[in-house]
Image (cartoon, rainbow, N blue to C red):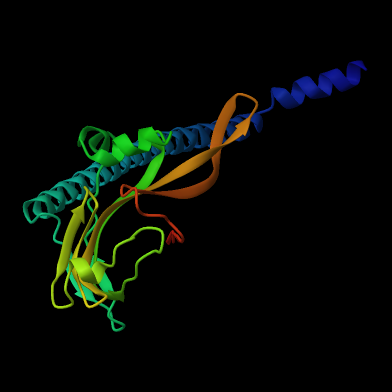
Length: 247
């Protein structure tokens, strides 16, 4: 053991150790400098990348804000133009002779629709629909008129005196009747009625969402329904269809 220790001490104290130790120190120093430079460059790259991402996010935010503002400005401008021209409704006829109406949509936010004073919001509340759940709503007004020629007769239990004895054949029996929605006028001559009937109606169309229910909780959307309400008490709705177009 003593011989081995003496040999190790001799090797450590030998002149050959100094150049090797110096080379190792220089290599370690070089690696340390290289590591520090790489760490500094990495820090600079991370800072530059972070700054770029922040600037990019800020740019995207302002672009989205500008686009939203421009879209809202165009929406308000279009609404003002429509209101100034009273809705710009185009009335025409189809190839089959049916009446056709075309109108540009008036785009409103829910709060604007609620504060607009339109009767649709009141009608929606009357049928139990909350204005906040309305996705689309429409109103249509119609007028129905027709020229009528029809024979008439007397019920046997109504007239006990011959009508011809009171009104000669060449005389006219005219009448007129109307209420807030329907008007009827005409004359009777030679057992024929000739006159006109005019009917006015307004249809309130409301599209709303029906939420799902679980106990007392309401969530999501179960279905979308369209409700049509006729303002004419003489009208009876017999058919309705609703199309919802999505992209």
